[in-house]
Image 1 (cartoon, rainbow, N blue to C red):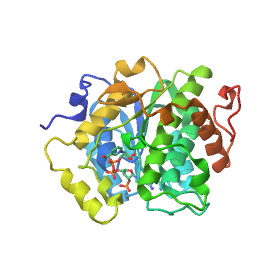
Image 2 (image 1 turned 180 degrees about the vertical axis):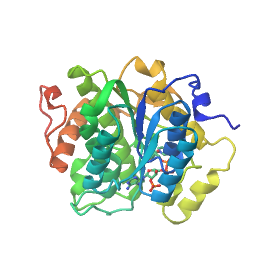
Image 3 (image 1 turned 120 degrees about the vertical axis):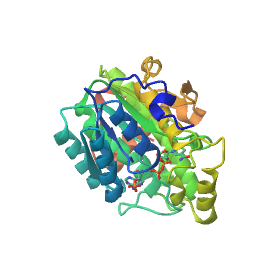
Image 4 (image 1 turned 60 degrees about the vertical axis):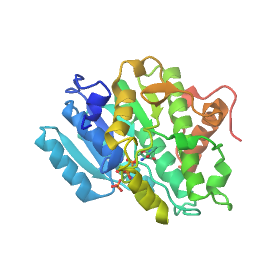
Length: 309
Ligand SMILES: NC(=O)c1ccc[n+]([C@@H]2O[C@H](COP(=O)([O-])OP(=O)(O)OC[C@H]3O[C@@H](n4cnc5c(N)ncnc54)[C@H](OP(=O)(O)O)[C@@H]3O)[C@@H](O)[C@H]2O)c1
């Protein structure tokens, strides 16, 4: 079946001609398919990733569709790189209507940034937290923020001590933990946006198991090859299916009803109990700002009972 992501999500009639989108991690995989779909629907698109050649070639493809597009290279392991992406986005457009926090990776046990933070947590959670915080004032009324999480969060429990501690997570544990953080972040963001009267929504999404993306490159040894092989097995989700999940959360009227939901199968579902823990979400929010040495974003919406532990 060669249906586009927008057709799969029943959104092919959507007109985004006055809208601007930033899709992180759009040089490859699911994000690339989302960026192309948004361009076909008429949006201006900011493409992001690390591989310049892949980014520039996507911009060319979008330009051929008469889409206004640009590529920004930024490695999410480096907060300064995230800050410069935010600055470019602010300069490039008057305001953003769609922010897809989609870039994601998986690093092996014990891999840390120069500031001592477990690298998967830095790339998958702290980077989108910082980017979103920098862009809050640049989001137009009615904007939506979609964070790509994963059902791999199930089984993980928030443990911020271990992110910096001496007992490292395994690669997969670190990934699951970062995806739990994505869901907690998206729901706390929704709560704080609502509490401060902002007309901006935030959701998280599990795109499905999508072995046809380039994600297999992050897996160790034989698992990498196995992941890629599954991409050709009939019945597994395609990259277009994964992109349709993100488009649904970002554009469908159904997803506009309530902010802060976790979507999969183009429907809101309950994430794990650890991902519904409001205290953990508040704690993650506050501690993330501390780890990044920045003022807490949307601090006016801090819960009455402080969650610092
Ligand atoms: N595939 C699945 O089965 C699956 C399931 C659940 C959730 N997800 C999530 O879906 C999202 C997209 O993954 P995908 O499957 O489409 O994988 P992918 O094909 O590998 O794409 C990942 C994207 O993230 C970017 N990225 C990775 N590390 C980065 C870093 N350090 N700094 C900046 N950008 C970085 C990549 O940029 P470069 O290519 O330029 O390096 C690429 O554009 C991820 O958040 C992933 O966790 C995937």
